[in-house]
Image (cartoon, rainbow, N blue to C red):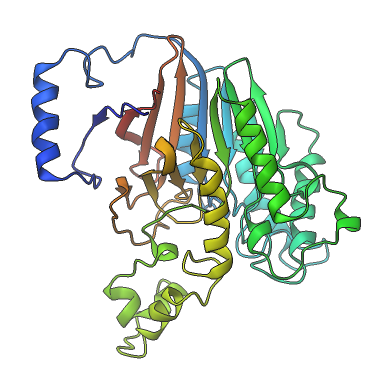
Length: 390
C-alpha cells in the first residue's frame, strides 16, 4: 500500500474531502516523519530518475520548445536518467513516406525531441496520432518512425516496443527498476494493423499481450515497476468525458484555436457524441473500455505499480486499482493544454504544460514530482510531490 505524503500548492487542483484535510493538517503539524518537508530525503542521492513526457509531437518552430528546454534541465541533474516519450511524437498523422510534401517538417518535430536528450537512455512509444489516427496506413507510419529513430545510430535512443510490435517489452535498470513498454493503440486500432505474418511479433492477439504483461509484472514483484503506454486507464479530461462550456458553445475551437464561432445547441452534439463512445480514443468507447478492463484485471493483482500514459494534454495523478498509481503526462507542448475536471480517484489535476519525474533514492524511497513549465524560456516549478513507497 502506498504512503502518499503530499506537498500542496494552490496552482494545481488537489482533491480531498474536508474531514481528511483536517486530519492531514493535524498530522503535518504534529509529526516529524509524515510530510515531505520533514525527513524528506532531499540530501539522499538519486539512483535513477525517470522523466515521463507525452504528446510532444508539435514543438514550436520559431523558438526552442519550452517544455523540451525544461526537460533538458531536469535530465541533466541526475546521471542515471531515463526519458520516456509517451506517444503522439509526431502530430497529426505520424511519419509519412519520404515523398510527402511535409516530410521534412514531420522529421523536424521528431528531431526536436531526439536532439534535446544527450546521453540519457530514451524511449519513444507510439500514440494514436503516430498510428495516423486509425488510418489504413497506421502501422506503416509507426514503422517509419521506428526506422527513423533506429537510423540515427544513437544506441541510447530507442523506439519501444521493438519492431513496432505491441509488446510488452521490459527493460531493466540496475537491480531495482523495470520499465514495461506497451503499444496501447494496438488494442484500439481498427484499420492498418499488420497480419501476424507481416509483423513477426512475439505477441499479436490482445489476450496474449495482456497475459504476457501479467507475467512480466509477476517477475517484477521486488522491483519498482513502471508500465509506459499512451492511453490512460482513468482520466478526467475530454477523453474521459469532461467538456467545458467552450466545447458546447464554440466546438470549432477543437479544430482551430482561433475558430471562436458560436454554435449553441448544435455545438453540444459534439461532446454528447463523444460521451456516447463515437470515438475509439475516448474511454466511453467499447474497444477502449475493453482495454481498460483487461489491464485493470491484471493490475488489481499487484501493488506499487505506476501506469504512465499521455493522450490527454494535461497532468493528472490518479489513484489506480490495487494500490497502484496512474500518471497522465500528456502536456509536452507549451500552451497546448486541454480542459480538465476531477473524479473520486483524482489526487492531482493540472491544466498546464509540463511532465512528471519519478526519482528512486539511495535509501530505497521513491518520489514522484509534477513539473510545471512557467514560461516560454522553459523555467519550471515543482508544483506537487508525493512518495511512492509500499
